[in-house]
Length: 265
Length: 256
Ligand SMILES: Nc1ncnc2c1ncn2[C@@H]1O[C@H](COP(=O)(O)OP(=O)(O)O)[C@@H](O)[C@H]1O
Ligand SMILES: [Mg+2]
Image (tube, rainbow over the protein chains, first blue to last red):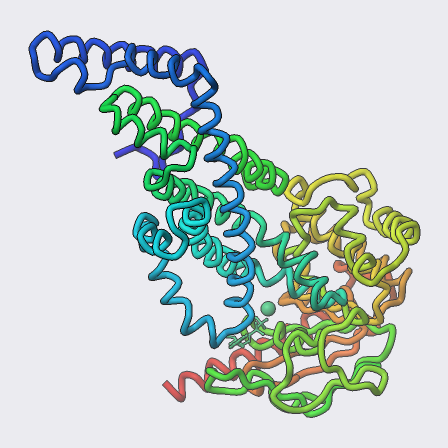
C-alpha cells in the first residue's frame, strides 16, 4: 500500500530514461530469442525477434507498403469516426431530450455497446459483402453507441448552477445549449470522443483482418499467410504505436488544453 | 414594484409545504434582506422570484405583470460565483449582454465601467480559476450589474468567503447600491449583514413557512456595525429570531 491515498502519479521520467528502458527490453527480448533457439525451445522462425522485426520493417517499407497501409487504415478510421460522431451526437441528444425514449432505449444501447465489435463482422459481410462499406459499418457500430452514451451523460451531468445563472441572464433555447451547456459539457464530451475513437480503432482492425482491402489489418493477415511471425509482430507493434499516437497526439492534447484552461489539470 | 400574492411552494416529495401563503410587496429601489435558519426556504423563495422554479400556487407580479419564467429583468447571484470556467473574466462579464445582442462596442464600454466599479479591470483577461473567492464574487457582481436588470437577486453571495473579504465586499456592495439604486433582494443567514444592507429585513420561519417578522431599518448610510443604533437593531432582531427558533425546538420536543 502506498503511504498516501490517493497515491500521486509519479513524475514523468526523462526521455532518455524511456529510451534506455525500452532498449534494454528489446535487448532482453533478443537474448531470450537466441537462448530459446539454442536450447531448442522453439524453431528460429516460430518466435518473433527484434532483428527479424527490423528486417520486416525494412522490407515492408520498400515500395511504401507499410506507410500506405497506415494511411489507408487511418483514413478509414477517421471517416468511420466522423460518421460515428454524427450518429452518436444525434442519438445522444435524442436520449437527452426524450426522457421516455431514453428510459426504454438506453438499456438496449448499453447492451449493444458491450458487444465486442468483431461480432458485427459477419453481419456486415452479409449486408455489404467483403468491402469498404462493411469495414466502415463495423467501425461505426463499434464507436457510435459509446459516443451517444457519452454525449447524453456528458450533457446531463453538468453543474446546474451554470444553467441557472445563464437563464436569469436571459439565455434560453439554442443559446443556452451552445453557449452554456455545450461548453460546460466539453470536458466530458472530449473524454467520450476519445473513448469512442479507441473503440473505433479496435473495431477497424476487426474489420480489416477479414477483408482484402489495403490496411494494417490486412497486412497483419498477410504476415499470417506467409507464416512470417516477425511481420505479424511488426504490424501489431505498428497498430499499437498508431493508436497511441492518435490518442496522445490528438485527443489527449486537446483534452489537456481544455482542462488546463479551466484550471482542472 | 414586485408583488408576491398567496405564494405557496410544496415540493413533490416533501411532507410539509416549504412556503405557505406568502404575501409581500417589494418597492422599486429598495434593499430587502431575507434571513432565516438554513433549510427554511430562503433559496426556494428567491428561485421562485427568479422564475427558475414555478410555485405550487399563488403568483408573482413584476410591475403588474405575472412572472412565468426566468428573465433578464431579474438577474441572480449565487453563493458560488457560477462564473463560466471556459471564459475569461471579461467574457464572463459580457456574457449576458452578448446573449441579449448588445453591440460589441457597447458591451465593452459597459463591462469596462462595472469592472472598474468592482476593481477587477486589471484582471479582465484572467480565467476564473485564477481568481480568489472574493474576486470571483466581484466578477459575478459585475456580470449581474451589466445586465441593468430591474432586480438583483442575491443568494448568500458572501457566505463562502472569509471574514475580511466579506467585510470588504459588503462595503463595496453598499456603495454600489447607493450609486445604482437597484432593487436588491439579498438572502443571508447573518443578521448583522441584513441590518448592514437592508431598508427592510424579513425573517422567514421554517415553522410557519412564512414571513414571521419584518423590521424596517431606519439607519443612515453608510452604516457602521459598531454604532450603538446598529447594535440595538441587530440585538432586537436576533432576540426575536432566537425566540422563534426556540419555539420550533420546543414544538419538536413536544412532538418527539
Ligand atoms: N428541488 C427540491 N425538491 C425537493 N425539496 C426541495 C427542493 N429544493 C429545496 N427543497 C427543500 O426545501 C427546503 C428549503 O430549502 P432551501 O430553500 O434551499 O433552504 P435555505 O435556502 O433557506 O437554506 C429544504 O427542506 C429542502 O430540502
Ligand atoms: Mg439556500
